[in-house]
Image 1 (tube, each protein chain N blue to C red):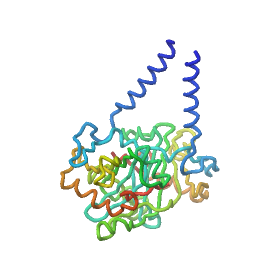
Image 2 (cartoon, chains in turn yellow, green):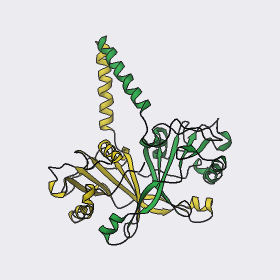
Image 3 (cartoon, chains in turn brown, green):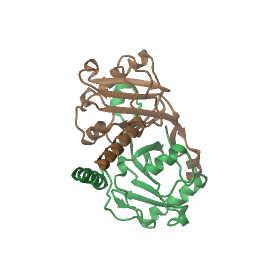
Length: 174
Length: 174
């Protein structure tokens, strides 16, 4: 019995360590976003990669889409709609020419991610709570603080253009 | 004792499931790369994200850099050289304009990852085995098959331009 307890304590300690592990970026204790009430999910920077993108124009960034386990499973299977509890994270960084590769290639060749830019965005699937916005709660955080209500209001109208894909622009990249 | 055994068997079953879990992309039973002998690491597509990039010119792709646990830890801490056993993976996809966001923004705005392109590349740190190439074994796989020896030979000379960064171009993106 002692050993059983030891094993269970070890289990509990491990679970506790995972649950309280500080994320390397993000502010999990930060305020909730206006409108949706979404908070920055704990440990999202450790989530797996769904895909990558580059935005031109005013955004001018390189970005990565990460997903929690439900998001990864659904996006790999290509099934719509996404299941309850899905969370998709969009990280972005400035779009910077890489001098190292200019040296290697003898011409401008590579653009890499610089400092974080354009905030971090989340989509959280809760069909009843967010029924008025396609079943998704949207949120943007700039430097760990919720963006203004005006900014938060721009999320859904843009994503509404891909209603046929359950309001999600990205697709899984194998 | 029965319960201890049960718990241990459950542990072992879980460990086995993790070890034999089929990766969603990659060909773990594929051939070793010429020169380095590096094989496609099991489950690399589930590794965490180090950074993202865009290559212009003939490469013309969007790419993601993933790392095993050692790579993530070292790149987050910014410590050089990378520890033994570090593996860094470079995935890439075609650089495709996204019609959905053109509709949303009213102009060309987003470039997203299309089908896989330019193979998958790995750097494996083993200072003694790969002493002649900076302590790294390099490999590229196209559609799961090792690229030609001529292609494999191009890895190290290019990475040698960033010798001061232990031959690694990428930096961790928070």
